[in-house]
Length: 162
Image 1 (cartoon, rainbow, N blue to C red):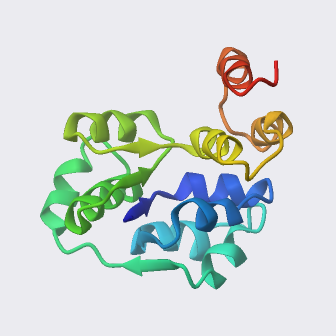
Image 2: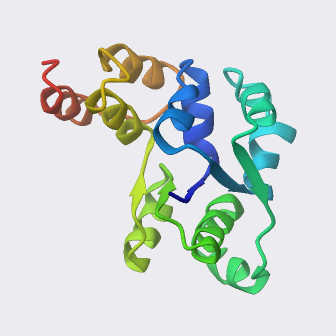
């Protein structure tokens, strides 16, 4: 399985101490250089993401080849999202990990499967890797993730925690 990740799921899962779920669910994950820079070089250490991303041998940093395609997407997306989407196409990905709405819309337009941080927690619960996810959802929201109460309620109902 080939998986490409944007920055937000890496930071989100690291911030709630669930970073290991990425390897457990997906094995190897590819990230573009910009995502590595966003998570490791230019950020304050938000929840340990800097250490987690830089030390994870199963995260592979790859340079995007088609710089022109990235430039075209910059009209709609930030550079991390644009590089993630282009890298996903270059690697013939199975999944893209992304939370931002604009990026997810572009992935849908391109027919690329996507999953966000909440979806990763949901998948981990369904696979028996987590006993419950309610506390993780609330921790994400405390860390600044925009998750509405109706979304939390729907997710918790879906996994039998409500």
